[in-house]
Length: 286
Image (cartoon, rainbow, N blue to C red):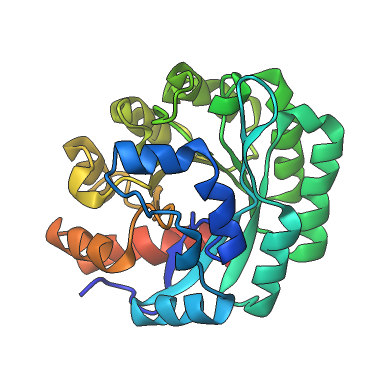
């Protein structure tokens, strides 16, 4: 049994409604799901559910809170691969405000208009952070075009979650190298940063930087626990026990299978509770 059942925080859960699933289904994310993961129906719109139904799913698996990004994923040729409206996330979160929280999406092409929108949804709609996907913008994590968004998050006192490591989509993975976070963490010492997706295949880089910087956290997101690199498992178990948070990137990972795999890693109850509950509650002020 996973420790902390009933209070688990999933820091990255994609919009699960039919409308949300349609957005992903019409993107390259669905092609990747079919070709690489062998899940042709991962984002099938018919699998979408309303907020009440999803909260029932959460209850069935001991999940207390999910964070849903208004995800912005650019297309290299211009336009958007994935564009989840902030309004959709806010509407869903408003149905269960104690269980569902929003993350503002970062689109660097929007400039200060995007920064103002981030502030609006944190201050007026209870969003608890921001989320960045760097690959589709063809900009590295430490690019100056992101810095106004980072500065605003630091000012508001909310974390930035970002995908770090490679991208399975046909986009430059170099922009997600964990080492780039060294600059961001030093330039914004008052900004909490979550490097997600374990930083794979550069997980050792991410581990080293999380150990180095007090404001940097490891996001054990999207990758099934059975595939976590051994150094990541050991880091979570030992000196990184206060610096790791969990997320499924739902529907990439399903709760039952994922929690079974975490149990199989043999963490102590204390370590599991920190990973699944306590660290995220403290980081996102839940």
